[in-house]
Length: 231
Image (cartoon, rainbow, N blue to C red):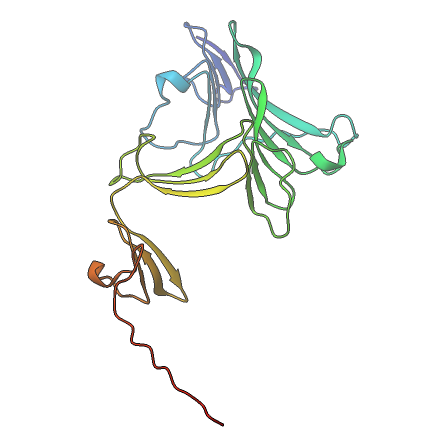
């Protein structure tokens, strides 16, 4: 190993025989291992040891950029020979960035295309760069003429024919689609107010009996009361 130190003190940096560099450690876990304190007996995963940052307490990494308008942003990139050097990217824009709409926003890109943005107000846009609307927290937008918001869990399964779908179609109708053979239940003020029964029919105010549900028609009798008024 090639050790670097100051005076007669313990080595501060090591270049070992396999080409690994350790800063603050003589036996680096990866290509570059920055060691401020021991995290215990744990070692870096083989697929994530190109850069290892270790400490005995909290650990962090900072990306600090200039505040000049054209430079006030930072990036983390993912890429390869096939997809290019910027195929995946996370970008954060500072408050002095040249484009006002981007300031203090965090942008996530895949296939070199923006997919999600958290803006300075904390609103989230998926498929849209400017989530808009009064009080909007989460804004979905689809590039196709049909947009689905699909919810599944460990009981429903996870395929396209499972769970619940909220859909906007072309023309712009709104569809509520229950893919399961179960009820759709609507609550107000913590109490069930309306239920669409799994077999059809609608019941109200917590009445869960299918026999009492309103279906496509109701049968009964009606006796007219006809009276003459001679006044």
